[in-house]
Image (cartoon, rainbow, N blue to C red; front, side):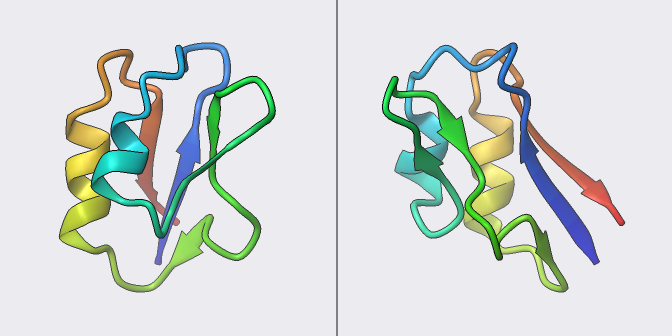
Length: 66
């Protein structure tokens, strides 16, 4: 099981995560990323989510083993 999160104190709204994995991320009214309910934990981690983490300029996207 994996846990996906976005550190809101680091996110600057560059939308790289959304470009790589639109199925796993969304944006609030101010343009900052978050992980919608139901997507925060997943049994299988897609390559697109791994790319989203690797390409976040602020390293705000985090993947942890739960």
